[in-house]
Amino acid sequence: MAEKITGIKRLEISEQTIQERNLDDVVKSVGDNKEAILKGIELLNTLNQSGTLDTVNAFVKHREDALENVMRELNKPQYAGVLENLTNLILLLGDMDMAELQTFTDRLNHGVKEAAASEASEKTSYMGLIKALKDPEINRSITMLLQFLRGMGKE
Image 1 (tube, rainbow, N blue to C red):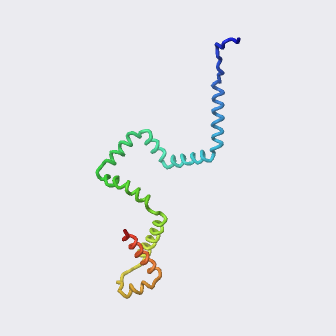
Image 2: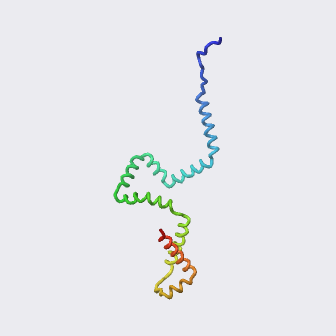
């Protein structure tokens, strides 16, 4: 029969070998993520030049005091309505079709620019309104407003 194994000699890796392996891993990772690292450096440089990096750094170092101050401010009565409505506003935005809303607001902004540019010093008569309906742009706008009102009135 064979003899019992009484002593196990562990393979020891030197500290220098471990550091070399770690350095090889880091170099490989840097090579694989070169573009991301360069963008990160560019971001840090931009934040540093604008002074924002110092602000963020100070905020992180003193986060407990900063968060305490923010919470103290938010607990003031003047912000209560905003905070209560914030959840409803976010849910409302989730229900809205942003593409249609964007089209509508673009047209609304264009209409506001046109109205601001015009000098409407004279009054419009009933006959002027009827004549204006023959203008395709006005007719299209009135039709859109009527469709909006019809849609808003539906249950």
